[in-house]
Image (tube, one colour):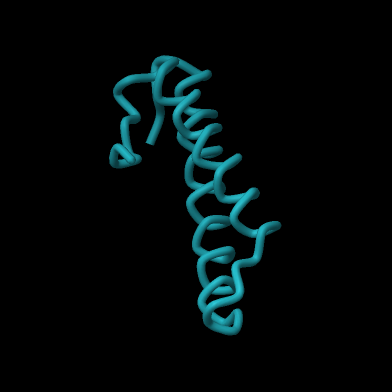
Length: 68
């Protein structure tokens, strides 16, 4: 699939990578002992969500993340 805007195409690839990374972090978080928050994982998830919001502001057509 080709896109007229190369920046949008790159943003789509980056979003796919971010989604895979979120999945990996969520699996790690689910394996963590219950009741013990892992601040490093939560902080990384928050950073990734912010990166996704920034991309969505730049490319509204890529609005993939549901609101908090």
